[in-house]
Length: 298
Image (cartoon, rainbow, N blue to C red; front, top):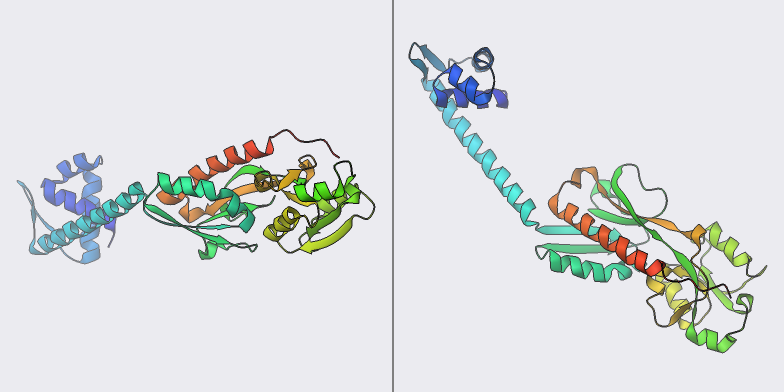
């Protein structure tokens, strides 16, 4: 049974004639008559007695009319319920993000939760990419220059890197020391991309690498502790009072920041609210931090 035909039948039953039903439905008399005939054929049931005074429901038609009204009421209730939930912006938003960026965005998350008290956040931090197609997360904040083609979203900022040293290490080595006199900290071989190796090489043929770290937080902690100098994300390192930027923003190391979701979720109210709010926060926050005056190379 065609649901559209059932709706036309309900309108005709209320209107009492095909002509009045056609007027209400903005269609023609012949279309309404044809669709009702098709419905009667599908059900093998006569729905109306066609009298000179108009349409009268048969017993079978009365039963179908009651069913149509109940179906319409349930459909309207479901639409109101779903629409109400969406407009009230309630529910959970599951976000996947790398740990270092999660720390940088905690103030933005706090502001979002204050602006949308009906929404809760579940934040998963991992160096692994969440599979949004399998609903491992609703939104992914990813860093890289080639996001998955199956996802929808936008590039919201650049993730910039610069060379940093702990104030304690600068005092120990000396303000006037050249960079190749410093010990270096870098990522493990699997995490160090060619651009960093190239930049390190320009400071000396063999930088004195004293430690390799397996993740962004460990890397930041090692540099802040004074183990060595290293390339860190400016968005967080610029806010660490233990650190000093000792080199310019390295344009060739910049990575895109993407705010992504699955196509099926892009029109969901709470997802749209989160992506709009956090997208603006990332653009403003990262711009402020990375547009600071760059110190000259040492």
